[in-house]
Image 1: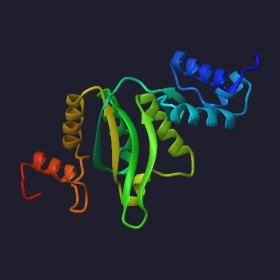
Image 2 (image 1 turned 60 degrees about the vertical axis):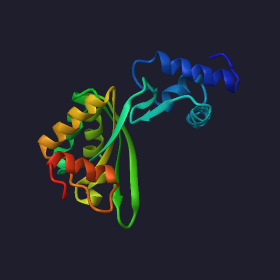
Image 3 (image 1 turned 120 degrees about the horizontal axis):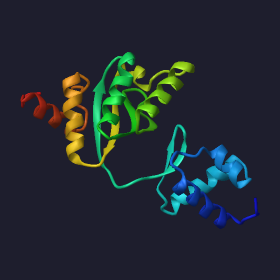
Image 4 (image 1 turned 45 degrees about the vertical axis):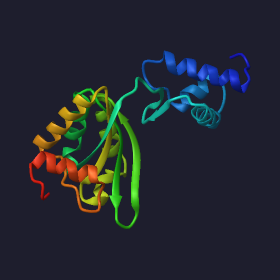
Length: 193
């Protein structure tokens, strides 16, 4: 590889990410550019600070796509239903951006997911099954939130309907944001909810 300065290397990172149909890991980028993975991590941080929209996924880095609509859903299910829940989102054409829990003692605990397909769901599930980790929602007895991105509000409405029909949409509590309480009123038709 021809030696390049930091600016040239960052331009090359953008070029590689733009031309790759799949995410590129930091290790792969480091090998392609003949630098350490830590240099890639630093370059990605600098590119993001300069306004480049680069997403981190469990498979690596990728450029962010088109502008999407965003909604947070509060859900509840057993660990065995995790794949079904995640597939519900991606089958509607959405991306599950993250998962977070609101714990009374620890506060908000959040993890990036960036799950876009059934293949991503399978990879995520395998990483949970094959490791010593467990789902973040286990900390709150299955209650958790997902930030979900979709091309339109209509798709987010469809997802909300499917979550409701599946029994995954959770009842908001008094101390939670008003948008969750209003959502429950709309769904149940009960203004006292």
